[in-house]
Image (cartoon, rainbow, N blue to C red):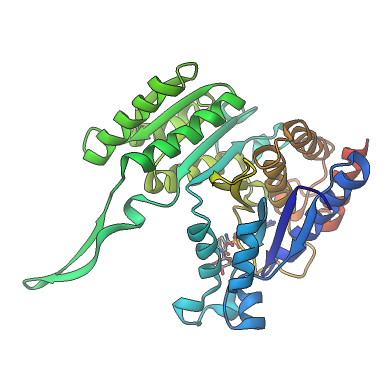
Length: 366
Ligand code: NAD
């Protein structure tokens, strides 16, 4: 038994296919590096609905609360499209995020040199890019009350409320400053303090936390609309971007596409530290269950494998091992190995999901 515990929830569609490759990587770390994990596995999403009539059972939820980190594949698929909203596969994922109170969503945008031509931007703008967007995930306009659609006179009115408390802003800011200290020590906070009171408070609190606890980290502020422009004009100026739920939703998708394929993008969602000091944590690729390629051996496992690298770094403080895994991925790509989603216009022969996993293991072992 290791004191590092993982709950694996492969989910639906290509989720189990990409997670099988992560299992190989986990086994390799145990065997070759003596870094073991106590691994349990459960159901989420449509797979859980099929077995139990719910996208996440109470038992699996309790298990998720008790481990150091949850690794999730993907949920959803056409078979579940007509289910009632309350039992849709996504509800399983939302319940995990909510009950684990995962308030800091980390979305790296890293451009591997071998894939720089996949970006819609010029190679010199994205080559070597390595930025991190920290999006507040549990508050803001997606959750604020009042909300709804009501009638005023003859017309309907839609209402959502952008609401942030000081403590919600402060804990997201602390996560961003801590992240920056592990990286290039720079945080750029983005909001709309020019037109939104919640933005004024956001800026104030970020400044207060910075002054009191993180004076060593370089802090700047930017209006979120300018931030969007700067992300496509000169993305390498950033290290960590700290932003709220709404702006983070948009800015992180924009940043992600700087780097090419959806099959390459990992993410982490972190909450408060547990008794052992490790944060509550859920790691998952950004992509969905890809029903169009499920069962064909075409899925790119790299997003899921890089999500495990994030677990090594942020849950288990194994930054060197995370870097080793990221470098193995980079080296496989530099050799020209490509799953179907990474094939350029020049063609070539794609390798399968498991061949990509094996190639990464071979590089780890080299
Ligand atoms: P998707 O991410 O599943 O797929 C979009 C496109 O990208 C597809 O053409 C797919 O083949 C391709 N793609 C995605 N991941 C890939 C990978 N690893 N390797 C190669 N190609 C890959 O998004 P979608 O098609 O909009 O949604 C499909 C289902 O997934 C829906 O049910 C949706 O609700 C669900 N979904 C789940 C999550 C999640 O689990 N976090 C996220 C997004 C969508």
